[in-house]
Length: 181
Image (cartoon, rainbow, N blue to C red; front, side, top):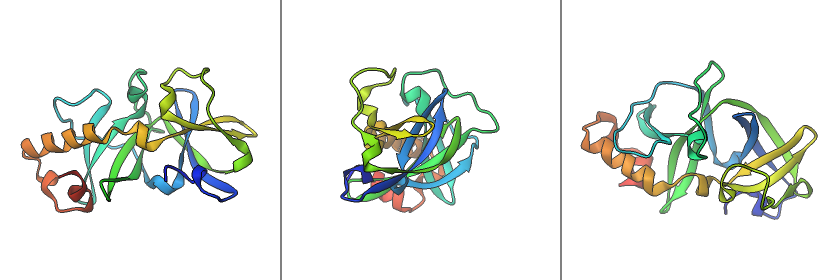
């Protein structure tokens, strides 16, 4: 199941955050934690939107700049910049991936009546990244498809390069490690 939007429940909860003056949301079922931005270890020969990896309590977590993934200029790191650690299923295991966002807002509850299919126009990001559009009293929230946003094959290449480089954390036996090998 992609998001709670596809379930028979009457409402779903989404973590909302800003990227370049736009509000986006992810189903909270995919959110593992939110952390202050911390420097990441750069890995050569990866797509520009992959900033590198970080050590999260012994786990190697790939970190993606969501703005860059959209084809926008890189995120300017400020005191409000956060890394949203997401958890997705990949080949039967859970995979942690960090998403750099400008600022985290809040968790919002949306009734299924306030969630619609995205229009075929009106955004300057690839339409397949936007799973649905949520209507809130403050405006629209573009609800992202975590599976479409994260190209797990590219993340797997990142992990392999980190291992080749001899990163000690890349060989830590973690749940994420089992997913990517």
